Image (tube, rainbow, N blue to C red; front, top):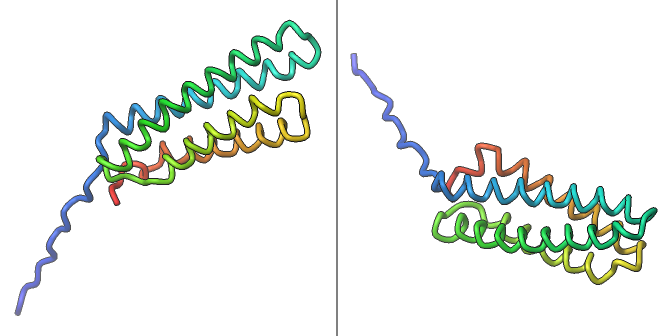
Length: 136
């Protein structure tokens, strides 16, 4: 009888664990900053003194988005990971800037906020899935 052996496939290459962890931390920080900004937004409608706090929280959202873009590009290009999180980070930054410029137009400000939450939720789910560690 002829004996056949099944050769094990080499394990799929993975994205650097340190880069992926840093990106996960940035995504969590972005989600937390968005939650804080949104909570102050609801209070700023009633109390004008909290409007400045809402603006400051929005600035933190912008800064974290910049860090997140850099980390997502590092995971994508040298790390050979997925590229869409870098584009999603850029979209978060652009939508955040749109929030800054449409603060007086609630018809634009509120839908932008909903899109921000949708994007960050997609990034959160992806970042903790096994697909995030796989290389292309």
